[in-house]
Amino acid sequence: MKNRDIGKQLATLNHAIKNSVERETQCDLMKISMSNGYILFFLHENRDRDVFQKDFEDAFGITRSTASKVCSLMETKGLIERKPVSGDARLKKIILTDRGETMRREMIAGRKRMEKKLTAGFTAEELETLHGYLQRMKAVSYTHLTLP
Image 1 (cartoon, one colour):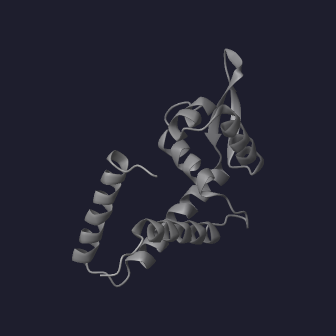
Image 2 (cartoon, rainbow, N blue to C red):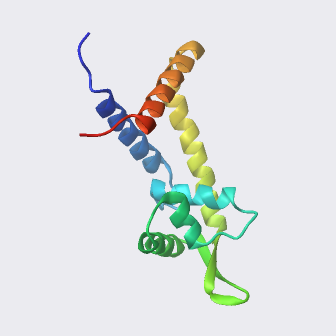
C-alpha cells in the first residue's frame, strides 16, 4: 500500500469544507468567518445567562485584544450588541442580535448541506466505520501526538 499523508489530506479536506461553508453562508450579501460563527453559536447556547468578553477569551483561548477586535467587528456587522450592566457601566454584556441569529441559522443549514454532500454515496456502515476512525485519530492526536 502506498504511504499517504493522512494529516495533510484531513487538513486539505477541512480547508475545503471551511471555504465551502463560508461561501454558501450569506445573509444580506454579508459573509462572516467561521470564527464569528463559533461566537454566534456560543451566544445562542448561553442565551439564558449574561455573556461577557471574558467568556469568549476563556471559551476560545484567545487574548483580550483579539476578543475585543472580534467583538468590535461583529458589532459593526450588526451580529452582536454590547450592553452596559446595571451597577457597573464598564462591564458590557454581549447579546446576539436578530441578524446574528439569522446568520447562525443559515450556518446550520449550510453545515447540513455540507454534511449531505460529504456523506453522499456512503452506506450507514461505512459512515459508522469512518466515524470510528476519526474518533481514534482525534484521541491519539490529543493524547500522544507530538509534532517534530
